Image (cartoon, rainbow, N blue to C red):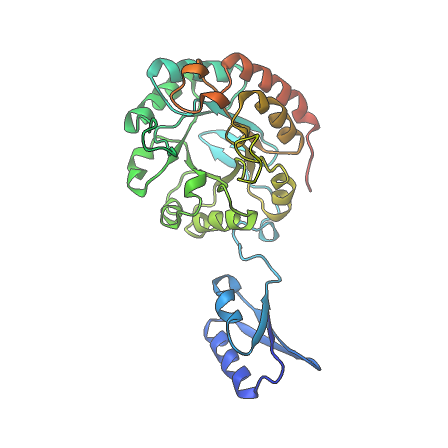
Length: 336
């Protein structure tokens, strides 16, 4: 980070600034120019409030020359992270499809879907037990019963289970869940992220509806700073001015993230687009672009689904998508 001081800054003002920065554990290097003085900061600047520094009377501007995320930064972790989810690996050349219903509705429903998606090549089973819905009157999930039904489906098929947590108090209930999902609306629930940093369980972190990539990585940093480094990022579309799709699926995140971080990246075309007929082309595009996996919603009877039926594929449609994706996978973009 560098701090550019205003012209005519008095020596005692600069000395006071340096003393304050030194108290924060930083070293300072002064570069005296003809018109400006530049203070270079060396050390962990992630704890520095840039807005606070920039608001000082003697400061003209503040600029970062290195990203504030350390644990999630590829500069410090050159090798791709491989996340092991109950024996199923994602990242570092390991590609997986996470598939299942938006919400768990019954034993028959989730077990049948689990069997079908496994036959088609899915490596993990997703299913919502707690559902964050825009309307308070919409189906909110079966909660604890839903997790129990996911466990039954896992026992029947062997597929590790993925489900979304919404509240810190629910953590004990998620002990049987193999991959805990943090939804878009909770991406910046920092209290929840801190708690997830204390557990020894992989986390699937979805991008917020209107968050930048750097904000997303800083949310991952919250978890990793607590000691839990097993993070999988999930792009699920961002809100733009476009109305023909539910959100805009930002596939440019794949090459951007591959350069910035060693964490695996999974793409969720179902939530991004909101319509089942768009899932296949975007799943194929994400695979070709080098994603480490996909998350796709599958329902045995989408017309009567209690949640997000319009974007859910039938098991037959999912099988078609999986075949196309696995054909593309050997030719997918590789990043170095």
